[in-house]
Image (cartoon, rainbow, N blue to C red; front, side, top):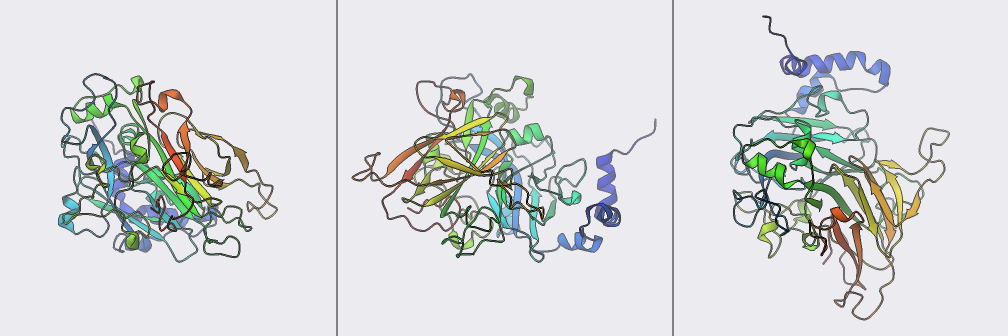
Length: 457
């Protein structure tokens, strides 16, 4: 019997030079854009990356819930944790020894990162290494980083394993991105994607527009899009990343079992990797000075994450979903959904305006082909977000009510929540849970935001 070479194996054997040369000779005639030449592809693998991520496994904590059988809490979980995950970690700046020590210390949601719009001289380089799975050494899965929604990505760097490179255990690979379209996106591992996506290898990413810094259009100089008139300007921004946990699947992966994905039934719905009331807990300590392209969570001497104050159970869920602001500030909510179910995110008492969807500004195409035509943004109190979709939403914070506020604690509280009951209850219909958080409007005292999701308190 003859052995055939699969497409994936062919790509591994052929290497970067062949693919880059083929792409450079054929695709430009159809795309009219300069692609990376073979020398540039090789150079990318030796250039110091802007960010360095590692794929591995680990443990996180879900809130207590009604008994759902032996799947939860996981009996193999270490103290403070109850749910096994696959995930990514930001290991930028760590040495080789420290990077190796991050095995089984994945976080969820995966580290949020952001880049500037490509203007011809600012390629973004992202290195990915695969540390392997400590709980499951029998699984030798490769990992990739697929930027979901990226237009006209260079195929070699797409992260879709049948048409590009995947990273085996113990190896690394550097992706090169030239992002030309501002807005909110998401990323995930595309190997065994049903499993790897659900197990936690997912996170938010967004592209900042070239218009940023123009204070004549909006005082803060911060914008969601290149709007030309300041209509997408904002004062504070908060990522809201939606994902899910099906406890049975997570238990099966830690116990060397196979879940039947046709029986999928999410038990927990998450915002930024947490379920309510944990969504209200603060961020882990962040080093603002080094948070250039991603939140730089403070680390100990070994490179491990430092947990939020008083919450050792949230050590690997460092990103809060709480929203804080001052009266009359414009706030940008960056929604992205990599769960398997639609969400209906509602903000009670404050009108929202949808200004972008799937990293596309809500404007029609003008005569020049740019999005400077009719305004198609719209006001709403509920945003329907399907799996794989993203929305950019603005709201203007209302005036403070006075006194000790509606909360009785010095701020007014508005609820941001998923209207779908099964996604906002942690399996207990008698109380709140899941994808629920608060918008807190303070009368004053908040510091200017230094990085996304900075609470300013």
